[in-house]
Amino acid sequence: MTGLLGVAAGAEPRRALVLAGGGMRVAWQAGVVRALADAGLSFGHVDGTSGGTFTTGMLLSGLEPAEIVRRWSALDVKEFSALLPWREFVRGPAQWPALGDASGVRDHVLPHLGIDVAEVRSATARTGAVGTVNVCDFATKTCLAVPNDEIDLDVLVAAVSLPMLMPAVRTRGRILTDAVWIKDANVLEAVRRGATEVWLVWCIGNTERYGDGPFEQYVHMIEMSANGGLQAELEVVADINRRRLGGEPVHGTTTPVVLHVVKPEVPLPLDPDFYAGRISADTLIDMGHRDAHRYLSGMEAAGVGLDDRATAMTDPPLGVRTHERLSGQLAGLGRVTVELVAEIRDVAAFRADPSRQVPVVGHVDCTDGSRWHATGGGFSVGADSATYELDLPADAPVRSLSLRRHFAGVLRLPHALRTLSVVGPGGAALGAVHAGIDDLARAAVSLEPTGAHDLPDRARAVEEVAKLVLRAAHRSHV
Image 1: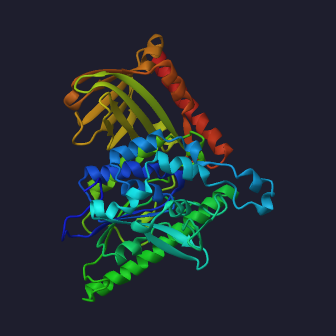
Image 2 (image 1 turned 135 degrees about the vertical axis):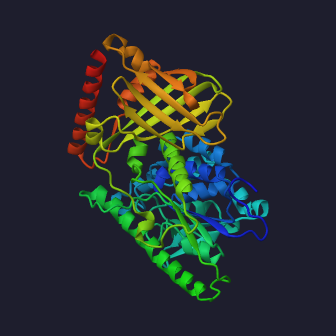
């Protein structure tokens, strides 16, 4: 068995991993697959659509989840973009095959992520699992699930070639593109292949908010297509389950299909935010790990309902995301680097009551190369301190960390900004971590509004943050 892929002979239930699209932000999926692997899950079938093709290709190439995390973390997202060749560009916009070229994905992203066609093709022989990647056959306007032993570089590129943004791929006598406008996840392919337990990893937004402007509405088109296509499939699965419960062996079994869905609580930042550096691959990965662990810790054997609530998310009010990076020597862990991101999803409510915890994601890097992603955590501000609480996986050297910034008057403010004391389980003092000048500068510019859909929203978020800072400064002064 390699990583998540593999299945013991005769194992039940027959489990499939369905990796939906989501553009470049599918870096989030790296954290999800690591959490699923840590939970001891394995899958006999993996299916990828659109951006989910990247994660699928990495798994089929034999990469372990920790390596998938490392490669996404090290990827320069600028490599996704590539200009059209000059001979096509000079033909003018009316004749362009797309706004950009596929060479960035083909020549840089796929190799960097470790996706190897030969390994993909031999994955079944190596692991016993099968894989499929979905493309749109433009001639028939249908979705084709290409099995891993037939996948080549053209199929991998076509699977992520969203019309208008990248050219269609002409191969095998067909014109192939990204399948997202037909479906963004192929649950039925997993069911047809005998899966009775389907794990859907979903990161396309799904809220009730309908925004203004061409970009917002382009995103809404993808949301409508992706979620609408999924709902149509879930209705078919629900009918299959009714027939199976009635004793009819549909696709060779009478066992009903159980659906598990790992998704964010609130929509992930969009690709332009990732591309512009407003959020990092590391933060997306940490979010994915946290979201998967949240689902695993509260999941029910019956899974989730086969309806529109399966991928529903909450549209957050105006908030802000903060980032800190600190290093130090901690007892039991050695030299570490800690990255922390607080998600203040309602900045006005937090300003009114900062003692109420808000979500935190993060990770701890050790000098031996190990990385421990937080499975949960919170951030709060008290009368004389601000505290991050991190829960770590069961196999980490410590199960929890509490990192505290102490306010002790204005003269001690520089020290408070740079130094956080750290305690472990039971309040055991482990040492301290410190921010360098570069880390402080990065933290200052990393404040990113969330739930902001226009410039006035972003301005209001900045205003709320300014009020928070002024309150903290006053607290330090007194």
